[in-house]
Length: 468
Ligand code: FAD
Image (cartoon, rainbow, N blue to C red; front, side, top):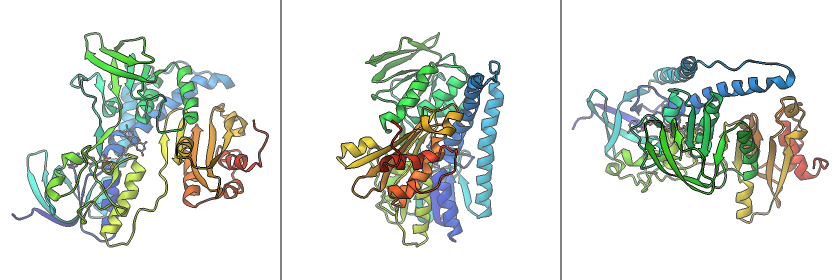
């Protein structure tokens, strides 16, 4: 059968992993095709993930700051929220970025095929367009970047629009009076922050015994305390047993240690994790091995078990984060172009853009202790930071985890406003193998929150002794 399209490299999926890989491959001179089922490039991150959530969190932050401005003598009235305008703002932010990507693809002569791609052999993909047209594409090499989708808890009435996944929650149909968030991880808590800002009464249930289960518990405490003060009720070690669509709302029954009082909710957001799309692309027809859960295994060069087929991003495993996907995308494209490279990053930072933000990178203190590593910790409380005091946000702290034998930093955790902006320094320090003096002796600008990173090193070092 004659192919409709032929190319040196095809990238399946145009999320942060896929578009980065396609652009890099084209920049390296490879004739590249990018397949995407949706009209807009950018994948989950740009369209229904990182970007729209942060645009809405910005609005929630402004509302929250205005509510506290009375502390320094500035009074604002009750916020008047126009949801249509807010939705429009979010869509404009997303549109600006996705249009930018389309331009970047054109500039590089990356051919974009809109449709759903599925393998038919180790060198062919069929692309089915929305119009029913099917094109056969023959490729030399392939980079799978088909991403992930929200896990849908079974037994929920998913055909009822009051049951939402993160995509529906970001669509911002309304600000429900009572919102239940199932799952106290990053996505659930970011959306809880947005809706609480918009005036919803928010309840969060989480199966584990802390919010954001991957982070150290001391980092999570200031967030949990603030949520409590804000009236967000959080329920740990609690599970939803059943959710039924009723006339007056979604009726929810719970099981666990700490069951919420209310049973009736106007909307329910389910944010219990994401499932990779590995089982939806007929990978077996190309001979690509996919795990039962839908992940594709790759080596340090992002190659699957079929050497000319690579995979990157959410589909290859945790952490499911955009910056991991882009890094892998670049690497796969470079290897496809013949570069002798492999994965060398030591650490990948994580950030919850909640209020306060929580950011961590490398080994957590809990992990270090569980593994029996000999570590020491330097912790600098923001109550001693002039900048944090001026911002009236002293609940944060910065913590560095050092290997006792080498005095090198191997992990960091920061909680507080803008923690996400601060964690990159710690990531660089870990990548560079910095010792405690390298960080402590680096002159940081005053007064900034970034000083807290150097101060944490000095606490570990014993240079600062009078904090506690
Ligand atoms: P995706 O972004 O999932 O893109 C895959 C693309 O492939 C999609 O466009 C899909 O339509 C397409 N596709 C799939 N199958 C096919 C097929 N058969 N044919 C054609 N096209 C196909 N990460 C962060 O780092 N920071 C954040 O702040 C952050 N916030 C988030 C907030 C939310 C609400 C969500 C849901 C996620 C968030 N993430 C965040 C995670 C981030 O979005 C993902 O890690 C990232 O998008 C993964 O990129 P990817 O390229 O692997 O895949």
